[in-house]
Image 1 (cartoon, rainbow, N blue to C red):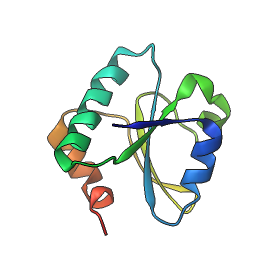
Image 2: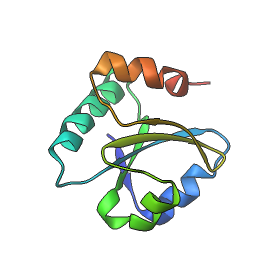
Image 3: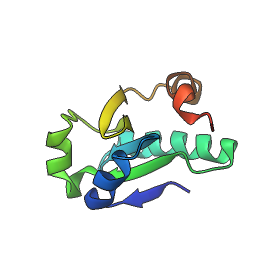
Length: 106
């Protein structure tokens, strides 16, 4: 369900007025794969796409621009500015607690 996007698409999406959540990861990262399964479960539970996915290895400039220190990283943008970051993917309930305000449909 999660839509993988390019760094160009990411630059466009994050500038929108609404909240947009970007899952920055690497295909070579085991922790990223676990985190992606958690996020996919959240999307399946909510029955809609909630996250965009960006491959960090293809977007080093984006990583530097937004000071993303490591992957996996879940970063919420509003109007081009990061407003929330999650680097720890403890559990689905933890992610829902952290991301809940941004996942509610308006």
